[in-house]
Image (cartoon, rainbow, N blue to C red; front, side, top):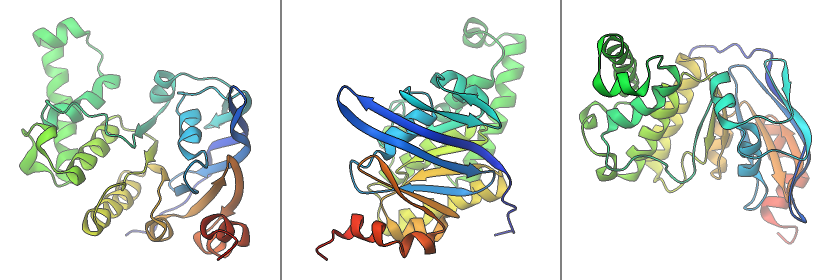
Length: 261
């Protein structure tokens, strides 16, 4: 892997608190993400990790706190605005179009970049046809990058789970994000699939220069691929630092192993 230059803060999460009725999902959470880094968010089940991603990509509006992206501060943003600013996301439960081919699923990630209207796209007239062929070219590069050429025309629902996860990553990459949010990209995978996915995440970070924020349960994967790790437990931040610092943090050890161990 070439030497990456970690840049300045691109995403700054400040004092985020999120409640659902009387239930506190997140309490006063602050952390930042630097350009080009792989930033992991970890914690036991129910720690608030997915809620945190939902705040970053505009699905939830926190009651307190703000999120800054490239120096612009927002207290509320919707998902479309977040996507237009250059933040893409994959989901824990695959939200792919199962009956559509791999290439069409990844093409759906290009909608944000299409200038022609849906009517023109449907009829593939003039400008729409030219535009579509440019987008297809871009998508073919992603397909090559993710090594799924053999499945280009296959309906996604027929693919094994590990490959479906790769298509999901491809669709997010098609949005050309500056920041990629990955929600448990390796959940349900076997060891070999996890190794492949780890390699693709590092390559995305390295070759595309994409900043990656990921939630992951597999601690060995997190320790291998992350530059920095933030640890949540019961909606509070209990650790933040390099993998080595987090691994040695007594509060983190206790949250993961239980104090009785």
